[in-house]
Length: 406
Ligand SMILES: [Zn+2]
Image: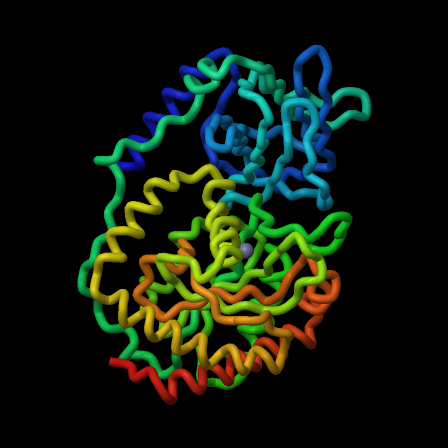
């Protein structure tokens, strides 16, 4: 049902935007993935032009979202020849981000400073040494016109509710404990970018690299099976991350992140567990940053909250929250042997990725990308292995002491 409504909305958008050549078809295949060799932005005659240089023709679908105002461009899956860093805009574009949204579809999000509409969007065929160019022209409009273009939310009645149906007990059938590792962000959501002038890796890359090493350390013991929510640079909705752990009836869910803060001197790891109220102002700000992932992606956050609230009223919550805290208590002293810890390393916040989850779960901020030392250490294999070993010891203690399956 929801799918049908989404399709109807998409069709309406085509009608609304009219005149533009829009195609909605993520499911077709090229022999070779198209490659983007350059991104250019120009502004003149009260028009902002966004251009991709590309070696093949691509299909595209564009829509507009508000709060914050942005233009979302879905295109055929492409390779990005290099990291077109900076991501700072020009003209009406404040910033932009891009990456793999899902297999078959790459997404570019333009955060715009003014209410704008896509005046024209087209592909220019290659000419005289110049490759294909995908061009989007933005023009400023009144707030009213902008509001009319904004993608309408999915009607409430069509929203999917979580089916709380009894499942077969997968836990008792397993010989090994199942841990779901969740490297945060990915695709067009880079996560934290580090401080001013920082030229290191974005959070999405640091945490994927760390998680892959942690997985190896856990599986090496023979006691754990690890499932990754993502093992490449792809975007994943927050709800789908925890859903993997729920559906697999995992024994533990660990979301892996790296933080940022204004003061570049601040270093150290923090372990977060879920609570309705943040433990402090910093934790609340951090949760706001992490929860933004789906907004960046152009998701319907309302829907997210609906499901969150639905599950929060269940009685499973208290027990899961207690177990999550027990794991955090095991993890912190072990993690402290691998990396520096922040003062008060156990904090709590309303993190969407942990909400609605009936599996003991924590979110670990491994350190601060805004601190050059932390940023450097976290990409080093040796540090990642130490972190992995600390998680092994914590999981061993947790399952031995507090957690009895069935
Ligand atoms: Zn993060």
